[in-house]
Length: 493
Image (cartoon, rainbow, N blue to C red; front, side, top):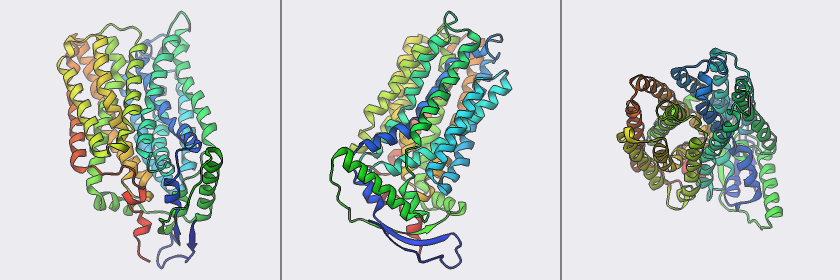
């Protein structure tokens, strides 16, 4: 039950609304896992499947995109550039849509960002030259970046505290379902005996748009975050949403729910200014800020450098013609890592799991770099499977950490900020560095020329793991409001 007292605007604060005391967070956290939560997973979590599909398709299309007749005549450097442009769009989209998500609500923005993604993907399928292709990749990245901010914040605010870690890790890991599907679907679509080479790669992009339309249909049924509603002066709407969720859970899952006693009192606000958000991130929680930056930079460089160019590496140095099977095996191991290791983030704890997954994956990748000259396509893929089995859970935990260790009013923008900064440092430079390394190594005929990229990625991951040991937050099975008190609850009357 929620109670409120609309005390009017506070003196000198035009954004202030009333004061509300509510037990809505406690009611959401005490829910058992129910069919409703599966709808959240399907409706919101599928964004990572779309991203995985996009990235894998591009990585697996390197050969045909280089073809000047059936493709676009791109070079290896331009393949890397396209990846960097996509990531740059994602960074900008995260920052732009992230602040709008905190201001206008989760649901409105996760519909808009999906539409942006759909538009960019459809346009990519009609690319007729490199400039058009680069522009479409940027638009698609805008939508994906905005999705990360809007969707991650909504998921964490709707999933019970007991399950938040494993669900967040698994959902972020579902990226690799899309990656595996993207790798496998390119096998028939790039077979000239089955599909005209001029159109096969375009059909690959069109598939992303079809999946996006299905997600849009499901997403329409996902409610707005009640936590966002009551902080922004819409406590009646928040109460209605929670009551409908409770009624649905009790009816569909045949359980009896008791009202929790824990409440929280907040001073409602229309908006939270950027200076307040910046002060919160850098002055109130500096250790958490450093941790998130380290985690995002490490995982972004590792994935965007290795995976964006993995198909190109197999084809350029190891004589692989069709890379789909290799990429699918690699992708499935990533999802298996998130699925299998995810529950341990709730049971064993955030700090030991984050540090171990980062450090182990970095060490394995470093070993691969040292023996790179002796590896075949199969053994290189095996090294990738082992390293990224651990790295996938670690990378997913970066998004989990950024979304749960900062106050609710800053959640979406914090996710966007750390994603953008970490990805700009690791995700844009990674494909560019690896693209140049591949070109240089190819001219020299020596695959070991790309080893420095492996060593750099490994070092960043190990550093992220060490930072987690000293700066990590024990957030397992805790309410979001206990991990970071809302800013509006800290204000004085």
